[in-house]
Image 1: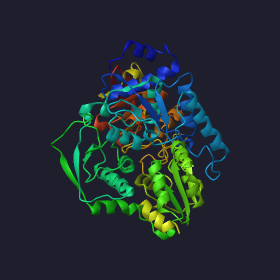
Image 2: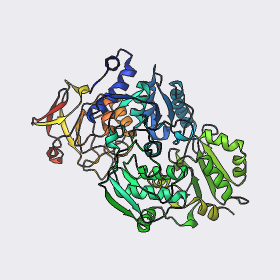
Image 3: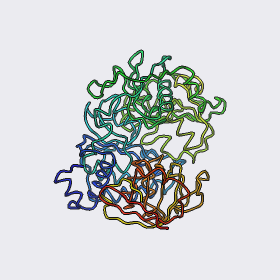
Image 4: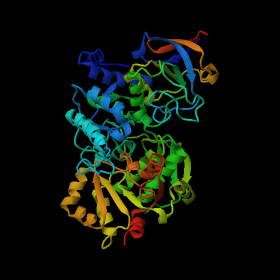
Length: 395
Length: 136
């Protein structure tokens, strides 16, 4: 792999052991995946910062590698283990509070923004089409490649950190236009109507394909929330980090491929995928919305659907603090809280230690949330649209 | 003698030790406990430790937290002495890079056979290769 003189110096330790280690990570990945060189990035997004996930091992590593380093590019970070603006005592004991706060203060000191969201593209980290970036968080990477037309591989915690410290990433995989080529054409025999349908559809495509890049043509151009849901579902079920969506993916950010195998998706396929998430409505004692973090539109839609009614079970909606502030100004937070809806910031049901709460069965509008609540937290889950949730669990 | 690919970071390294072959993909987050012991009952070497073994795997799987767990095992001298993988994956690769554990990939498929477990092997790492020899 070709390295500039400056990069050689960093690798030789001339800029300290932290930059040396960060460079070693990038060069090693580059060598294994035959990257020709490193490429400068416009931004980084770091996943794997919830103490509930990374524990002391991750904390120690982040502390070590960011010592004396400052992120070279605009860097946002994923959600953490609890809402730092108002920690929920059910989720967060003293140890969790201290350890998570330590991780956060280390990252902020190194120059990360106070983002704590899986939707960096909704809060200002929205790279232009064609830009190279190094992002973690599978749903965000997939949205970035498919919708924004910027370029990133699916980075892990340490590799995104290394990229943020150096300001570069190895040039391979989805950074190369020739790799951004659809492998399969999805033909839809169904018309998704609700955001949750897009989520389940993405999930179903992911389960069926596992890898590669699907080409998808919707009968109408999906809105941002629908694209967000589709990308998150797709990435949660597979190693896929990009789809080419007709009328959405910017031309020039992918290669045309006329010789594609076709895969039909029918109602039946969605129903098969839904089977894992079909807990009886009667057993639901918790509703979780906001995976990925709800946009302002989605929060407003929930307010519209629940007008004049109150929640019958605990309802939690997660969003970023940025969107929260906007909703607060519009008075929507107040309205929803009076209806028994709790809006949480900085965290979500996947990265929070939800096991500590006494929850039996969860309803959600997100296939990604359903997938992880079932796998990681061992919960029984029902996937439904937010419209159905408003009808069923509000009176 | 077998050959596999490796990376320049491990150039000049030499490892000798007992093999532990896991024929199924492994997640360091969930399959292995804090002491390096295999705790997934579905794996053949349930209850054995990966500590100081030459670990042979098809590839890693699951969460990127695995990289941090390799790092933690290494800090406490409980990590494998080398990892040989059939396919490269960034999770195990990065775990090895940050923990200074020699890593090779694209090993011959024949080596991914549990019959080799407990056999003594030596591995020499060059600029981009690993030379693997059985010595027992």
